[in-house]
Length: 367
Image (cartoon, rainbow, N blue to C red):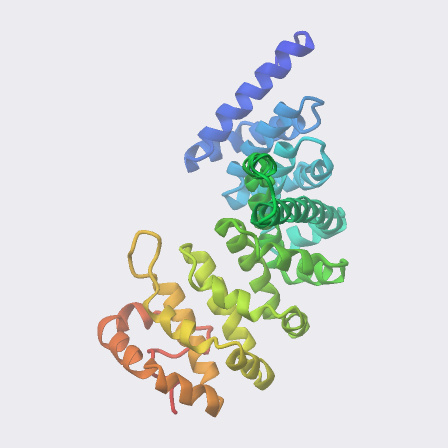
């Protein structure tokens, strides 16, 4: 697929073949064959192309191959991590988006996280996120201005029509790019060594918090998933509390996406690990939404077991404080927990052995 012909046809071939391989890589058998036949090396070489479309398609092919751990390791050994980080500063936003997707799958353990840090990935990702936040802030500011113009009573019809036209033409910054950036942030924040470096980067978590308020629910949900990882750390929780993040996590409990529901419930459970966090949760009126999460559904209307389990654990921790325990009783937490114990005891009882979680919903509740 890489013939020694003149440059233009060669780039077209590379682009087409990379696209074909990206689709083929959805199959595990194809991923293995691509790796065994030096396809990952050829795709990695395509990242050095000067043609943006070639880089874009090669990145997506590598991202899809990186669903398998052997492929992740091979891509890393071939310099895929370094090349992907380098493309975060590319002028083409579609290339940046695909680089974020690829890197989100290449950072999967301590060593890959270390590679990401050593290659300057944290600084580059922080810069990409900061630039996206600026674009979104400009969009919000322009939108607000046009809305205010339309609300003015003394505005003539021509001016109102101009403001309405401007509002309709206003385009939100590329949603795919925003989702890809935050997907990368999420995977990086799952690794403790990368998370530590992210905290050191100026306003990194502040910009992620800015995105949790994004008007697009998917972008906001991805930001929630990324930020929730910060709540695992003793150093991270005070930082999030200072940002007043709890109301945003509570809001995310109502999202349709199950992963977002789960991340929000886990974050709330982590805040409830100490008395100060529990007090903040109580003041933020988090108990009622948390109890409502005991009936969580996925986007297809089916029972969402993992978010329910996370909500049970969070309720158990919140109930350590008398004020929260009383409120939980008042809003019917016990009756819902008893109902779940009768109807979902088998699913909700499947807790990992390494966890200190209860075997059933009532194990934590001793009001």
